Length: 312
Image (cartoon, rainbow, N blue to C red; front, side, top):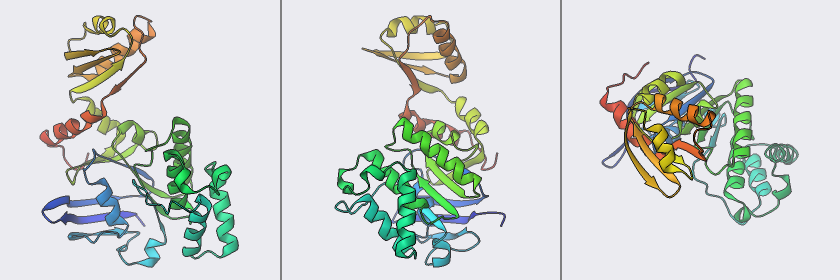
């Protein structure tokens, strides 16, 4: 089958709110990133693909068939939701065991699968503890475990990095790469570009319920890099750092805090290079630096205003 997921003029609205607007896209097998700010339509698209929502207009096909009320297709799908809704009093083991039984596995096979997946996610030492006692990262691991325990063909991961510490994130990246090598199709949603590019080189940009672009990460990054960006630098010497950076004519404004400096630049590529060079040459001392997450919204507004075509 050429396409694992296909949407044709797909729309979903809730009253007067348009969550997804006339989306047409063909997604092949492999790992695909779904990138967009909060409220862009990522979760709505995923829930339509899972048959949880009925399209208001158009259609969506998974493995060539409509997923809604289709047990044959639904049994081949895995889903890790952004939000969790656990029965807090039961243990992680019980939760996974009964999901396995409901998926059609007998008691022996269910137990085998649960123990295997809990070991894979390093949860065996806590598997009999009530879910209510789990940390956010542990709860996320249980969600990921249930998404793949039944060996699905197509897996939807909605903001799966949320709540994971750096070590757990590396394990998740390894897991996604392993599943991909086994021929699984994975749609991975995020609002952070660097998370997406750690696991795939192909990304869909979605904003205000519309697909802006579908292409390689490097092409998407080139588009975003041209947008004026806000960079937050943590340092104990903010004024010294700015004194060194002030030679960059692309910096348009700056603000200071106790141990932080925020700059706006019209060419983040050049500014980041200068910042890296200054750190390597030991001319400045920096604790960390990042593009402000809240600035992603303005990045997408910029992309809309520049009339990016749907295909790159």
